[in-house]
Length: 513
Image (cartoon, rainbow, N blue to C red; front, side, top):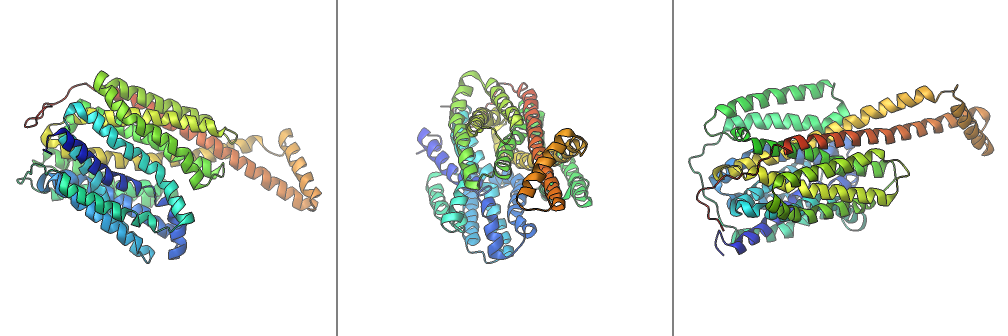
């Protein structure tokens, strides 16, 4: 197998998929096991939450460095190092004896996991010529969509029937296999030994991204007006503004922000940002709705979500083929439009919405995701000079990380605000002078009196029941409103999609096959 040979490219893609699948899986597999870990370690939600937060923050801080590391160490070496660190971190998580040790080991795991994805994508862009990248990224995207979908289901099975520590230790044999295959199959990329590490850029980006991602993860509990959140956002803003100004003046920046002078790359990044928020409109909001309002278990919800992930995975290589034939722009626009329309339909969910209606709408969402996710990324990356592929991949993944956290923060805030609004709005009409309210209270009082309650107690019980009904219905309405917002964000994504141009940069030094 030669570096440019067709067989090598697909074997290398297989190796990259192994690491990517494990890294993405671990972003979702831990959530279901949190109550079990809280019980084992004897901690509350506020302490255990750092098991998730530490992983996310570490990944976000490290991803901007991957372009530089690939340039000076080589993509193969960086991929192997990240895979080894991730595997060791997974093994350590499997033997964690306390909440603090678990948090530390999750940070170790994230040091590897945060690098695996951008390095893997950089390898794919490097070894595949532009005319094959859509298909290659479509194949890689199958794992990217399936992993977060099966994570909760797999975790639920381990926790309920086997051992919760398996959610970590299952990575060890897979990681060892992936490392061995990477050593023997992957070819090293050319090194840029003259590249110097941008320490100021790293410090300002690390502090800025850390504070921004921490604020976005905590805002649901603290609120946007909290001094703690405002302080984090202020520090993030100051550091990120300084980072942008400094990087634009630096000869060898950590993140090459001059790439955004490229209209197609900028447009594709905006579509990715908005589309990722739309993605979380489903994978975050639907499970919340089904489990909190429809009383589904985590495993039942996982089974409901899994077919949509499979639909997205199946569509990714198909969308790549279509994009190769007719261009990325129409494929991306149709995909974003489908995602937006399906999300808009979820704005009509209620407690009696049939299971199979939700099932098929999720399938349509999956098709939309599968259509646009990889073609829009490839369309932007194809316009990037070959020497800047690793840097562009780092930016792309940093944007995904931020947009995912931003999407959850925005949607959670809308959900909370609209619930308060609907409770207040319904309370104005459901008062003691309302004939419908009086009738409902009277019938409920009679029911409690029939079961032995005295009149004063029955009145209080009837009011409590009515209050619960109001709260529950307000929660349903707030979900509907939040889906409307998510759909609007998806539709806005069509605007930058229209700016994508079907043009590729000729990468010197690469053979065309």
